[in-house]
View: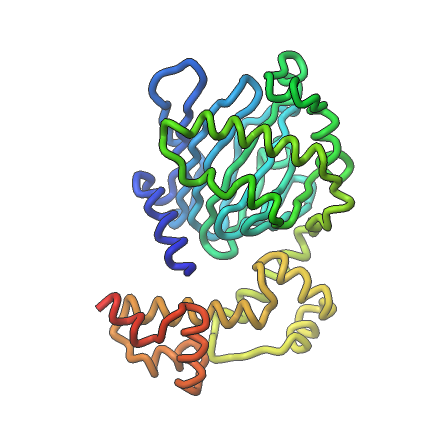
Length: 331
């Protein structure tokens, strides 16, 4: 359930105050990890934590935990570094410097050169994100390639060009191959992290070496203006849950054709509009049942359900239990 995801990520961020970004770095041949609160000027409701492990000179892997809605993010960058991001939970949108927006969700991989996101806007459509980033410094790896690259015969510059050439940014949708690579990397004992990540790094690079983006139904980036329109539509349809809008009404109001509206909304928020609004209404109802004394019938009405039986069926479909059973867990 989404609440479980949010709570687990919040636990990872228990040592991070609101509006702060904690960077933890575990470098080769050093003792204790270095902890540092970075100056990111985040909104008070946003919290970020990154835990970075240096696997080899030129290769780093970071575990990323984000909570918030939308915030500006900046970092130092090297022109020669490509970042590969895997989303474990939630969704993320990146508005990059060239006017492109890239959204990806659970199980997806994204690719971009670090210079693309050194100054960027990050949007978390579900309010949370957990993922992993692999950073490859092309210049360093060409000068002194580690054994995992030498023995696999991987041309690291060609690999980066394949995914971040003319496209500048790209994403591969979730697949069983990607799931196999990342399924166990998020819950490792501390002593196993480095050796296991080194194995998985080589496995990922070999997978990408054999993958052609043109054949993989890659996810499309959109222009920021299109995604801004979709976010305005999202604000309208979630502001007053007693109102229900048709695709045609929204299309006319925002001067966007129905096919584009449906496609971009699903890319940004991960679900078709009708399915998303069903989930959104039930999440809000669950919040009311957890955090207020409102009756179940009043909670149903507050999120736009006139029929309590339809509300109970929808609630059980999303939360896997009846509203009455859910409330008993918190009272």
